[in-house]
Amino acid sequence: MKDQIPYKIFLEESELPKAWYNVRADMKNKPAPILNPATLQPVTVEDISPVFCEELAKQELDNDTKFVPIPQEILDFYKMNRPSPLVRAYYLEKMLGTPAHIYYKFEGNNTSGSHKLNSAIAQAYYAKKQGLKGVTTETGAGQWGTALSMACAYFDLDCKVYMVKVSYEQKPFRREVMRTYGASITPSPSDTTNIGRKMLEEFPGTDGSLGCAISEAVEAAVSTPGYRYVLGSVLSQVLLHQSIIGLETKTALDKYGIKPDIIIGCAGGGSNLGGLMAPFVGEKLRGESDVRILAVEPKSCPSLTRGKYLYDFCDTGRVCPMAKMYTLGHSFMPSANHAGGLRYHGMSTIISQLYEDGYLEAISVEQTSVFEAAQMFARTEGILPAPESSHAIRAAIDEALKCKESGEAKNIVFGLTGTGYYDLTAYKKYNDGEMTDYIPSDEEIANSLAKLPKVE
Ligand SMILES: *Cc1c(COP(=O)(O)O)cnc(C)c1O
Image (cartoon, rainbow, N blue to C red; front, top):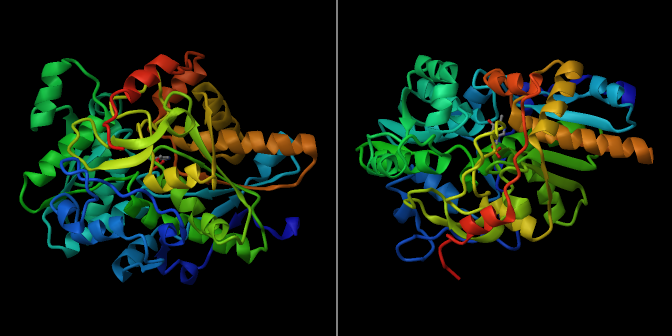
């Protein structure tokens, strides 16, 4: 069998999935409902429609529809870059000397350089269909802003991006890509919103944070007629759109009769992992498989491994609904020396519930070991990986090394979510031997958890 598996498993255009898979339909314990912070009651579609596009609001709250047909206009766009290849990492395996078979699903083959385009195009489509003028959003490292700019250009929508100030300054080239696609970019905190002005007054000279940029983008959306807010991770609608990654992966594996033993994804807000694992965790939920699923997060922002499963605010300004999730607290600020993305304080409600119920495992890794894995991968497989994706590479390599000791030829599948061409400042730090690790103290985490709202 081994010799029959090509280096890249490409699917035909006709094998592109025609429907997204909603894993919530197969969950016995549904994710806890998101709450209106004013009433502490579960939100309704009407509650969130001033913020989100209507169809997306419905998808957000839909725990029951198992397959959601993908509109033809979105399929047409997907065809530009999809189906994406599932690659057998023969050269990495050889370098490691492992009997394991390592596969990666490569989502970096588009200009935005990440999987985020899968949901960006869907969200832009529903905004256009609703007759909106434009959308607002935040971006941290910049991949989501870039993906959304591309999607908005395709559907001729205006796109306003609040970019965390430190990235705005460190990644000027990201900005130019977004502007080329027609988006307008504002560094956050900014003086264009109430919450931004408040942050600037309270913390002059602040680098900004994702939580604050979210608050600004939401405020801008609800105060500008014809605009709605869109978000690139964490939300259940985003995991739904990202299920295309897992559905394609499953089709490719099935085509060659490969049964995965372990599925690995890096976890920031949970969207790529949620998408990659969706059909596999579905089988687990239905009792049809015992595949291991592994979430990999940074030691500097360890929401699953050191956070608490409680209701929290999703943003610093507390304008968004509250979600029950594994969280480090909405006031948690990852250390400034943390380079590798994945810096959101909370985790998708779907992933949180599945983790709570034991359907997935989680580990955290240090950033120097992440960049070491990135370097090994670049030198063997040729792709320059995004630092976020490299968390999954680290775990895949470690699992493959365990197989080397035990002599087991396990099938390891991981998500290679994107490329790292805009992360060269971080690579430089690593190459110069100047990268350090930061692990928050128990006290630091306890302090930020103490600020959680009292809900239960
Ligand atoms: C945003 C991003 C991630 C992390 O986000 P998730 O929602 O956890 O998937 C991972 N990799 C890349 C390349 C990203 O852009």
